[in-house]
Figure (cartoon, rainbow, N blue to C red):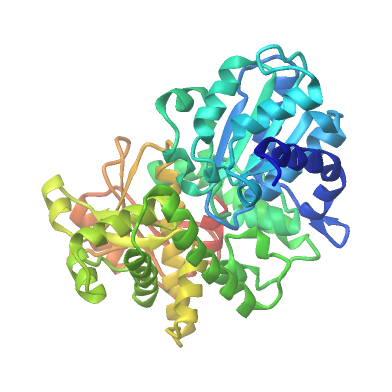
Length: 482
């Protein structure tokens, strides 16, 4: 039997010689190239700075759940290096830790040392040329972060990108964290959906949504909404049903070329099962019973409306302990398949009230519900359920990305709107989401109850952004693009 070094040498040789041709099949189909996620532009800047010795940002970590396009992003980076920056092919090493694991135990440090020794006749410390390591499925090497830290410290001539499961950022130590830049690759929003599927590149300005949420100002939003709609309508390939396609099946660009909606649904279901079966054990060694309970919990979430559900109720439903439920929720949150909102109010009230759980995308909720045969036959009601999930996900991402506000659900029986935004700029902004001609009674009650200067209704009550008195009306598609 061949020794480990020989096996790894063969893997490196094969990747170096075959990748210059093989990568093309990874970045397009039928001679049509995939469009780039916005993150590609950020990575290009880091690469250009590295090649020009401008900055020292050369340890990039890109975690994300399955299907969001992390591997495609790596291959697009490979093409950029090879074709546009004319980096020699033997200075770009693509590694899939999953593939290496099928051969022998994956050790990125060993692979890198072998690669530099055999292909550049050198060692890491004395390396005198620019090298790029593109590492996919990094979580299959338990010591990937330590390897990255050591490589980073020993040379300034290696640029590293690590992709892997959403829990990747949980696995590296403080020293590695200080040296690296981490950017979560999330399921795509509607803005990226249009960019990737139709190459519609809208001039997105974060300040516009900021003006709406925190100042109640829609002036700039009205202008940009008109420009966006005009640009979308000029695209001859645009499907008028694309909004519904996104709401029911969106978030995962790897399914763009699949026309069969049932197959897309089944693939999303399989993706969630792989997260449970393969990714969760990378975070914590859980029992077979708890893996089963995790799948059942996800199905349970899909079967109910987005409602606050006590852990006691879930425990009784699954016939398992509260401790197991806490473990399951904690793990699923770390994989970013789900997130939760707490009730708005004092810390005491938040501790007493149950949490409200949402899926990362509306398509996950629909896929699991449909697969279990629990589809709401009333399309308006189903659209409303999925819309609430989509809006919750967008607001949650904004609150998680330095927008300096906290997001809650409204537990007050008196007002009971969908969301409450709380920030130092505005105390509270109530937000109501709905499908159909949503009236303003709930939002007015909430504004009075919380003393809010203005409120927001996201629904198709209006065909464009409007402000009537102190209520802002935003069509769902417009909100998704802001």
